[in-house]
Image (cartoon, rainbow, N blue to C red; front, side):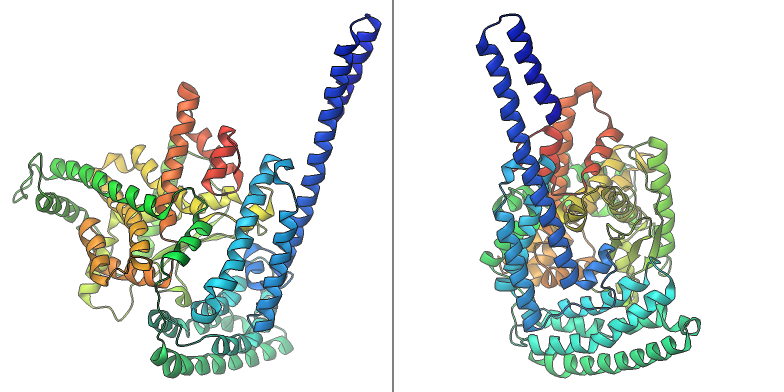
Length: 608
């Protein structure tokens, strides 16, 4: 590009001189080429500096966070663990501050538009990490940090076949040998007076789950190892069992009885964390106002569907055109009960999800809605160490691990649940809801989006894949599939889809209600069971999740609002030329940065 511009300037000068044209025209043409050349040199220099800094950042992160490196697909540090000791935290803080200082030394306006996006998300991540270390200090009060790290350290090595089994077991053995030190760091760092009781209790229930990973993935294969390796692994397993038992005793006798911390973040910390989490222009107040208005709107649509499906049913509730709140509530609940009657068996949820995933995939292929993945996906039972926070999740391979399996994980119904608890769960996760779960976590939701995102060449953007984009896309696809006539335009599926969407809306209100407004359990349950029709078991689980997490639940609602706004903006610009598949493929082609940056790139808007 630059070379072409220089040639154009020189040609203009020669033609002007030969034709005896005014020297002003020639000088102007030459000046244009020279200025453009200088601008491109400046941009190339800035892009080169940023590329070097990006690589430096990734290398530092992988070295300081070996477990995350494994999940990313960088396997240089598979035999190491993160160091959460005082010295380890200080090293990470100093490294990230130096990286942020270097980033601030680059003039972002001189970067290419794609690099402007990467610079923005990198700055946000470094600032977020430093804020977490210095202000939020999760390492001092959240035992989930250590439990998740210990479990993921082994699971991340064994769940996917990125290398031969003996190699992965050797790495897992090295990590098992380091986990006792990680548990010791937890006992040193965690201040029971700052640890919320719900966090302590949850981790006390999850702690032994790491042994189930070993029993599932490692123990059955010990005979396949060379004798020396097998002996070392057996010794590491015994050492791990002792360490887990010691940690369990500390959790049960020290942490849980003395946990006195406040799980609510408070307005100041919540707003700061929300800003880092969302990368959105919407404030907490604006999110709440939009969500409350959306609940009213969606309930009205649900009432209209309820009137249609109940109008010929015996013993149907009153269905006036202008209902009271009680009449609206009764009608929608009666219509939802028709959907609840169709549900899987207690032990059939995973099989139902597999069938639903295939059905959704076939529909997307038939309607040609978006390019489908060619990498494998498995529907699995959620590993024990990860249960207790969400019912399902999608675990995509890291951006450097190509063509490996994605896991669509579902938590089983606990063995100790009563029949009443089980019935409540299966009413919530009825056949239509299982379909929506397969759409959200699978196709065309997280699994498909993760496959597309991994194709983007920027590893930095892959590592910093936006939760706002990912969750917003997954919720968007639920609505899009219904709009396209999935399940033959079944009105009960539409009704459950709207209910599932209301759960998304409620998440945003619940999160700030809990962490800022001091909501009681009763207030939270009213929002979930009455206003948004969730079953008791689902609402109880979400109440627990809202205490255990913060600033993640709003990503669903804010993300889908931005996704819907983007689609309408592109549709308005393209008019009759708008094509849904082309639109979807383009949206997914940018590597999943926050939606605001996808919009800027697609609509040629300023990158802020």
